[in-house]
Amino acid sequence: MNIDNKTPLIYWIGGSTCAGKTTISNILSTKYGFTVYHCDEYLGKHIEKSNSLEHPNLNRLTKVSWNDILSLKVEDYLNWTIDLFHEEFEMILEDLNTISNDKPILVEGVNLLPELIKDQLFDYGHTIWVVADEEFYKCHQMQRKELFDRINECSNPELALDNYMSYDLAFGKYIFNEAKRLDFKVITVNNENDIKDNVDLVTSYFNLMKCTANNE
Image (tube, rainbow, N blue to C red; front, side, top):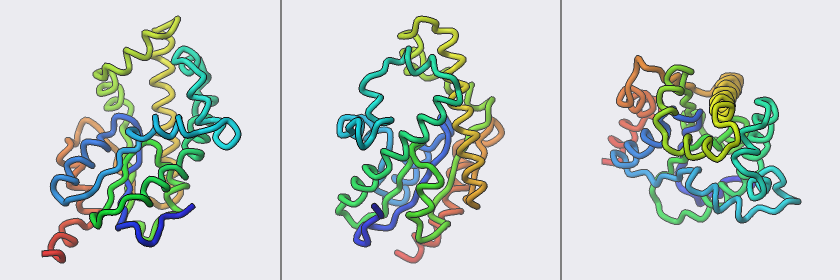
C-alpha cells in the first residue's frame, strides 16, 4: 500500500525513544497548523486489528507479558521490533489515507522505519530522524513513570531495567545507521541542545518558514 494521491502533504519525524519527537511535533502543529498523527496513540488499535497469520509479530503483543518481553536477548528484541513495525506500517498508511481535511499531516513515532518511509516520499526534505544519545536517553527515560510500571511487573526488575534500556539504545543505533545509509537527515539529541534548538532545526530542514510565507 502507498499514500493515496488525495492525501494532504505529509511530513515524517522518526527516531529513537526519548528524543523529543512528540514535543517537537506538537509545537510545530500549534505554530504551522499540522494535523499530527502520533503513531503510539494508534498502536493499541493496530494490535487489536492484527491476526496471527498476517501479523504474527504484532499479534504476539496480545499474548506476552512485560516479563516475557523484558527477558529477551537484545538481538531477539530488536529483530522482533523491526518485524513488528514492518507489519504495522500498512495499517498506519490506511489511517493516513482516511484523513480528509486539507491540512498538511505530520506523522511521528518510533514505529517509522527509514526503509519503509523511503518508498512513500515525494521529497527527501519531508522526513527527518531524531535520535537521542545514550546520556540524554537515560536521563529522560528514568523520569518516565511507564518505565517503572513495566519493570515492576517483572520477576527481576533490575534485569528488566537493564534490558529495557539496552533495547532502546540498540533500536536507536539501528535507526541512526539506517537513516544515514539511506541519506536521510538525522539530528542527534544530547544535553547540549534544548527542545527549541531541535524545533528550529526541524523547521529549517522542512522549510516551514518559506511555506508559511508562500501561504500568506
